[in-house]
Amino acid sequence: MRRRSVIGSAWLAFALAEPVGRWLLDPVDVDVQSAGGRRVGQTDVDALWTMCGSFADADRQLGGGYARGTLIHFADQVMAPLLEGAFTESVGRRLFAAAARLCDIAGFMCFDSGHQGLGQRYLIQSLRMAKISGDVALGAHILVDMAMQAHHLRQPHQAVALSEAGVTTARRSGSASTLARCHAMHSRALASQGDARGSDEALNRAERALDHAAPDDEPVWIRFFTAQQLAAESMYAAADLGRGEHVRRHAATALGAVGSMQRRHVLATATLAGSYLSVPGGRGEADVDQACRVLDDVLPTVGSLTSVRALTAVNDIRIRLAPYAARPSVQRLEQALRHGAATA
Image 1 (spheres, helix red, strand yellow):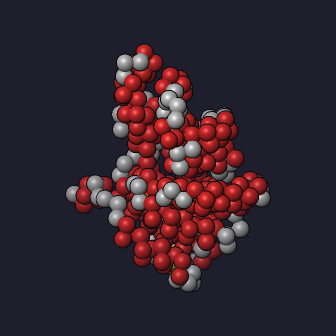
Image 2 (cartoon, rainbow, N blue to C red):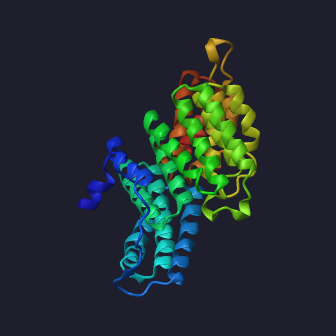
Image 3 (cartoon, rainbow, N blue to C red):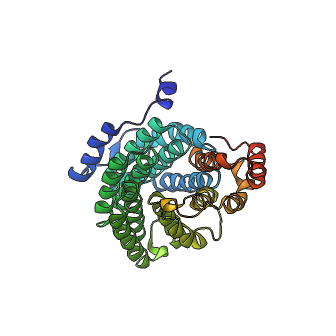
């Protein structure tokens, strides 16, 4: 019964103050070793990291709803007993880093599949574990995931504050890719507030940081943040600022090779389609047929995604196309989407 109530819980802005403040201000945990339970070694830590990779791949490819329950079961039945085991200081730090990443993925999956309160709980727990581990780059990454959730929930002030905390943390992490991602999310958060100048400056800092990144030297969990991912983030920021031309300029890079990033492909494609329906200042006409052609590209993918974010993005375009329901292109698209069950 408690699990059901937690799954349906709401995201709460005030719940962020204490964990984020503790991350930024409290000293690093000194004693991590434990003498309880069974002996935990590096093999156990390696196994957790292997599962992190598998769950992250499933999330990006199929959406947060696909393996969320499996991950939570794994965390309860496998990860939690390890944290209660016996381990040395060095193994303990590495163990908590792996556990933090696993909880981070769980939180992101919950957020992506519409369970906002549960996602927030996992992300807060993840940040605490990252602090125990002493992994500064991972902490910055988690803060930006928290900022992304706030942005999605249209909480711009929280998104700005969380992304700023991520930038502050990433600057001392030694990970250029993590710093680039933090700046990119900060750009999106500022764009959602209508701060075009601040958003542009943050995006320029993201580009400079990514230029200094050496992928082989970066943590494995941030290697997805490439120039293609940055282009997608640039599209989202431009869309929030009503800059259709900027969206289309970045689209060529963002919508290149799809690989395992199916969710990103749908989100970026929906953003591009929306750019053809936005006419700044009422000048000109919306290019409805082109918006439909762009969205056609993701029809084979939409039906298999378990991402509320991605399906909402597609359905937002459907709503914007509703005034043009008599157009043949809109009718064909709507029919195809209905058959693909593209409903959030």
